[in-house]
Image (cartoon, rainbow over all chains, first blue to last red; front, side, top):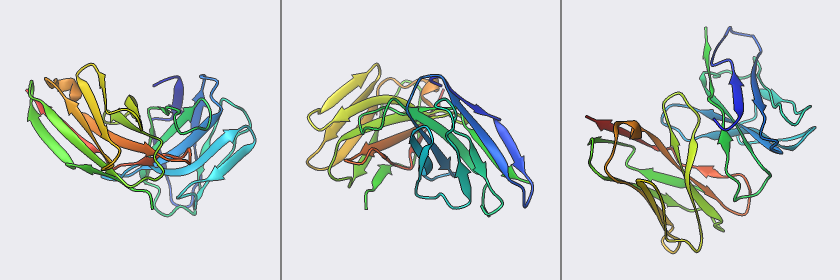
Length: 114
Length: 111
């Protein structure tokens, strides 16, 4: 998985609870991304970060929050405001922001609601 | 709006047979097109990248083609193997560095 580690592999959330998904990379990549994947749908961008201490909203940021305090780490918090959080979450990174850069993906976290 | 459409949605073939997956896009201006392979429960892995000037690119048994005029790409898999069973995702990048993902084609290879 290209040096990107996501944890946990499976996560269960109770109603009203915030949960945090971990993403760590050892590729020295500047850019990191969070995507959500639902069955039969393409990947949708939640948040992305080009450099440390900076991040931007993607297409479906509502109900999610992120931080980028270290270059290697880009955790995603699914808040209680996200009413339909059940999905497969993928973290990715690339060397720099540029359209020719290949995305390296982690193995994903499957989040389910109890 | 930038869009990437893939067909078929799913495909079942016998081991050893060839198959072709299609991708149509409306991303403009166009920068590059990638095909990714995603095994079940895993993250996608890049197979090929094609830029505007490239028509064909191969990676082992995978051959991608690009027609930038008609905005179409195909991924041809030769002599399929059981390990080719996966979802194949077409991803197109334009002037923005945020790529547009297709929904993928689910390929099942039966022995």
